[in-house]
Length: 452
Ligand code: FCB
Image (tube, rainbow, N blue to C red; front, side, top):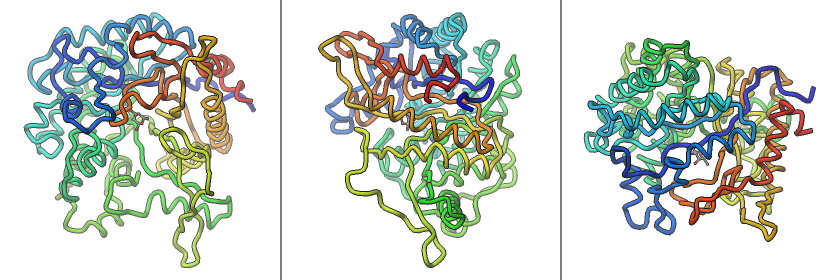
């Protein structure tokens, strides 16, 4: 079998703050990422998302490019403060209008919109009221979800609540590398994480209650994917256990987030390790968090390796010296797209969607005017083969979203990192299809058989 399953969805993604620009237009309210970019020394070379890829103005052209590539789906996020400039209260018709037109244009081009409600551009006014630490924060997010559902759910049926809570809590509130740039103590980090989960639950409830068309709802999760060094049973169990059962004083274990969502309880190892640092959790909280979902969205770029150690515990295995790296210095580990989906499917039994996968590369415009990125084609081929192997092995997986449709503002790295299928010449705004975009078009046309 070379093809992926019938009905498998091929897409690409982007996020509001990374591509839109138009930061001060259309009544958009300030976000924590605006403030982060105004803070000297926080973003590489002082870059900001103020202009981004100017998608806020060039969206028509961008939809045509997606059509040219043959995308079946486009995953994008809504900027919360375009809809609700203060994060709550008064809605902004101009902001809603932007997404209205984008959704219409996508549907007209035969591309299905997959909407992420929150991809990190948190309303600054709500941050000043406590942000995710505030006991009101779950409700703020649930109310925002209801407004978006009312505006778009007559046409949008695919929804993701949150993008990568481990990142916006772990990097945003614990290490301070991402907005809002805080370095909180661990009990506060856990409290914010808990509120995030509650917000997710309330948003799912709001979508289920208000969507005009039956919604398919998930989230886009990330974490530490662990692969075994061999297929020996002991190594496989060591990797599984490392991925879900080993906790540190950080938020990168998938189970910290998705055990509450799918099982309605925190992992016992987390409870034991964190002890009194854990937030006070009520049964009602867990009911709200554990709303049934339709798919498990995973953003996967790489993995670590373990083997069964002598003591019976997983032991980390270092990569050989000189191992292949992307320009993010993330190792090229295609196995991540086999073991990540497989372990998540075996644990949670929810259909998997790879909501992000891709690489940053040293792309530039060649003398012949093209952008040649054989490394990206090789990378994506290797990863997709592993994903297909997982599916052949029985994992139920229903989609794949390459990250990203175009080069964009890569958070603290600014525009230095290029992840796109489409090259963006920032000074002019010109878009150029990379070789990988043409390759991906053939992959989509052949429902994956094109990867060989
Ligand atoms: C993920 C983010 C996405 C992008 C990729 C490279 O963590 O969700 O916005 O930055 O990494």
